[in-house]
Image (cartoon, rainbow, N blue to C red; front, top):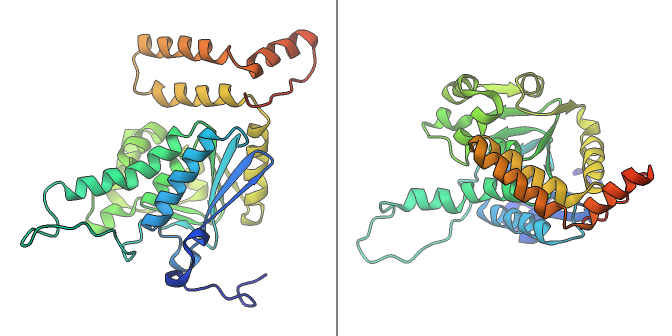
Length: 284
């Protein structure tokens, strides 16, 4: 039903459980930011709910892949600075922003959110339906695979506000596109179109907006039918590789192999190869 015939409740009155939509379909968990009236600027509630859902995806055997997306014409335009913040009691005369406050807010907020994507045991696909700016860009880029609609834009908006990038942006970007290109994006804060993002290796795929859900769903279903633990351990090895020396990387590889060979799927994959048939992976 269109918005014209079904007007949205104003965000301030929107029930908390409707600010983030969740559904599980064929082993794929769909997590959808749903505050299009504020361009999906992420509130503290949404942040904590997304973290909760990603942690739950790691624990639930029924979840074998995750798609992170949003409604409307924006994926996420950053943190919602107008959202109500949790008030912490303080002594009379204490400053509103004591030393350590900002760092604590970043650690407990943006950094937790991005880390939840990177640390999820299941593959995470970001289906970017529109503008991804600030922490919204980092939320998308932390995913294992990024599919973007043709109208999507990625913006390192921090410099426009006189701010230092947060949400692991200065960690992620050099690893995705190299140091000099990362500096260019963060120093100037220019919009990067979906096509340009694809060309510089920032994302994996660009599709027409009308095909975004189908394309992301197709990749997610392929992942959900695969050997879930092997994919999760591969994710760990790849994420650690750029911070590891060779000896550490090879040690990581050996323990990942040891762990994976205890799974039913690893043994099924080997047996299917011997019997020249397609494997039937169950996710454990």
